[in-house]
Image 1 (cartoon, rainbow, N blue to C red):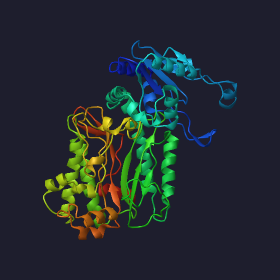
Image 2: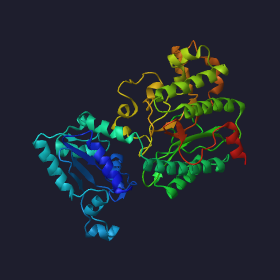
Image 3: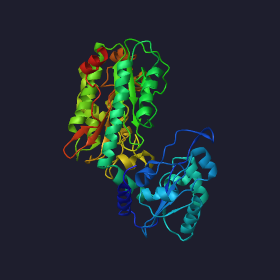
Image 4: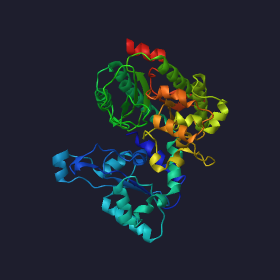
Length: 463
C-alpha cells in the first residue's frame, strides 16, 4: 500500500472526469477452490486497489460525484473470525489509512444503491468479470446478466484508462522490482535447464522464486518445447537435446505490480544454425522497438516496424519472396507472428483489459485491423511518457496454419511453401522485454536485462 496521499490524489483526479452520479467500486471476494473454506489465493480487483489500496476480500466503495463524499463498505470481524484469524483492524481504521473518513457495513451499500436508482441517479460501474459481481448487480440494480457489459459506464472506463495508462513514479518503482524478480525467475531456469529434466521441474523452480520474493505469478507460466503454440501451459515434456524451450513467465509483487518476460533458449546450450538464424531475426525486431519507441510514435507503427524486419529476415533465408512493403501490407507476417507486438502492463499483466481491450489499446481515431497478427495487437496507441508496454515479437512455424494458407493459396505469391516444410518441427521463438516510455525514448524495466543475443544466451548456458 502506498501513502494515503497517493489514493486521495487519484480519487480527486477521477472526479475531474466524472461530475455526476455514484461511482461504484466492487472489490473482489474469495473464490472457493473446492469448498468455501478452501479458497484460491486472493486477488483484489485492480481498479479497487488503484483508488483505495485495501487488499482484503469483501470490500466495496462509493464516491458521490455530486458531493465528493466517499464511503468504504465492509463488515467488521466477529468473534468467530477473531478465533481463526486473530484480531483485525476495523473497517473504519482501514478506510482512514487511505484517506476515507466514512465507512459502513455492506448491507448499507444495497440500500444506498437502491435509493439512488429510485431517484434516477446515474450509477457508474465497471464491466464485471466475476460471476459474483454480475449476480450482485443483477440483484441490487436489476440489470439483466446478459446486459452487464453494455450497461457499464463508458465514462468511468475512459476516466480510469486515462489515469492508469500513465504510471506514477511510485508505480514505476514497483514494476522495476517486479522485473528484478522476474529476472531471477528466468535466469535461474536458464542456468538450471538440462536435457532429461521434466519441464515442470523448471516451472516449479521459477514459481517458487516468485512466491518467495513476491506474491504469485502474474499469469500461468508458459514453458514448452512447443513454442509454436502461443499459450502452452502443459509442462509434462522431457527436455530433449536439439530443441528450443520457450519460457514466458512473470511475477506479481505483494503490491500486485507485475512483470512479463519471454526468452527462448536452446536445450543443448547452443543454437543450431537454423535456430540461430531465426532467433537473430526476432532479437533484431525486439531491439528495433527498444531503440525506436518514444512519445508520439504509435505502437501500431512499432508492430509494423518489427514486421518488416521479420519479413525481410525470412526473405533473406529464401522462405519469402517479393517486395517487403507489399508483403507487410498484405499481412504475410501474420503467418509467422499471429499475435500483436505487445500490451500495456502495470497492476495487471495485461493492464486493464477487463475494461475492454479497445478502450485500453486504441486511440479514438484508430480502428482495429482485421489482418491476422495486426488484428490481435492489444496496444496500438500513440505512446506517452509513463506508458509501460511489453516488446515481444516472435516467429512461429505452425504446420496446420501453413498448410491452410497453402491450400487456400493465401498470399501464395509471396511464400515459398515447399521450403517451409524444413521448419515444421522447429517450434517457435518469442523474446519479450518490459519497457517504460520516457520523455525521450524507452528504457528497459528492471536493473538487468536477460540475455538476448545468440552469443549472450550461449555464453550464459555454457558457463
